[in-house]
Length: 394
Image (cartoon, rainbow, N blue to C red; front, side, top):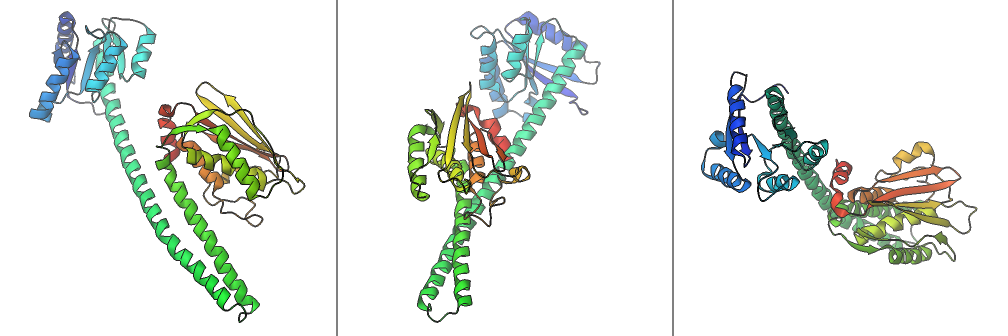
């Protein structure tokens, strides 16, 4: 805070004309300071909003720009915090300091939570405190606008990058398919003319081509997550888990799978992403079982918190070394299992992206030879996810 404005134009909204006169007198008495102030006072929100709109539409922004507002909480039709909310709806582009005769820390904290820059009780602040409050409120507001602008720039760049990656990935899939198909035709046509080395080379092309295709397809699914999180619906987890169990038993040719879970809630989520989330995590409990386990064992546990659900997916498989655990969430990471199991190393990256995109968190607790527990949270209220989503993206 080093370069304060030399002249500050203040919008005051107060239906008590005596309070307006007192404020004018106080500002007049501060003209000897390094800053000067001018007051534009109105007795109602509607009059202030209408006047400001006229100035911004027909006047010079340089001549009429207001830097800050002072707001009395009791304005006839609206009382208390409802007044501040009405102000934010109509004049939310301005930083606002609440001036009121209502003392008490609770009302002050409520005002700050509702978007006020500061809270001052009438007749209980000095001119110096008033000047400091105004300057800091203006500076904080300018900083917040700059941060918001930079955030919008980052979001725009992020969206453009995703769009570019998606387009490039899409364009790469078709030639890869062509390479694999043409190689398979060569294998079939010249099967009896190729020596072992040539046959192995063609097999390698097919295997790696398919693998690259799956990686590109997985990357495209990863990039689509942000769009799909906008399509929120009610997901019936009990029904979803039943479908996944049937699918995975068939995929792994299991006659028996000991999977235990309590009655599960209906969540506000995207059904396709919920399927990917639970399918990937449950699939890992089968893929990474111990060699001595003839039947996989999986437990799903649930905790009901006030604002979110806590899920735990527990197995008794081979576990993951502690030093490898931070790396498993990356794209195309397979930890220690790259040479042991098929796959592209995208499953846990997808699950983390899905959980973070819905404002949840995900973590792992694992010990080699003892099994793995994946713990993740899903917020109950989709409207309270914004902050967590921004953190996960940037």
